[in-house]
Length: 186
Image (cartoon, rainbow, N blue to C red):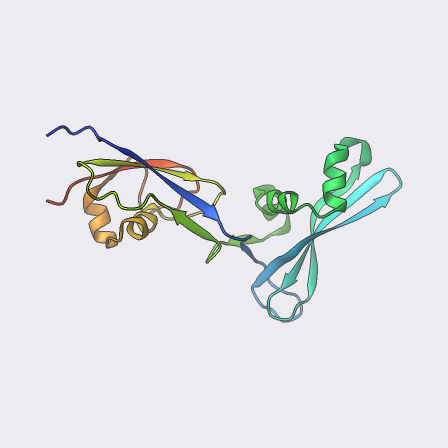
């Protein structure tokens, strides 16, 4: 029996909604906020522009602002970007929210619980062993590979650790694509 995988199967991790923000509310001390409808606030002060992303506390509905741009020269912006801020473009909201620099500057983390799904091919367990699976991330959803593989294959995490060959640590969260090989049951 050959040790080279016969089949490469695609798995895709997709965002189903924007993640919640782990951000303490100044009013009720809740630890969770949402972008809701995804709105920007744009303020022009002479030739300088301020842009904020508005977020709402999930408990008390208080609105807060996350600084996207502060006192940035208007000429440094692409006109399409300014238009996107003014019309609250959903893709621009998503790209700014998923920007790690914005998260660090505004001191929040993303809570991806319930905000993603794993798309896998239907039945494939009839394939010749071993089977190679390529995991691709449409968005930077941080997941532990052992949990993702267990969910996708319907295995226990202990069985995943026994049957999976992978070049990355299975118990350390990743949001970058990776490939793993499923070995036959012993």
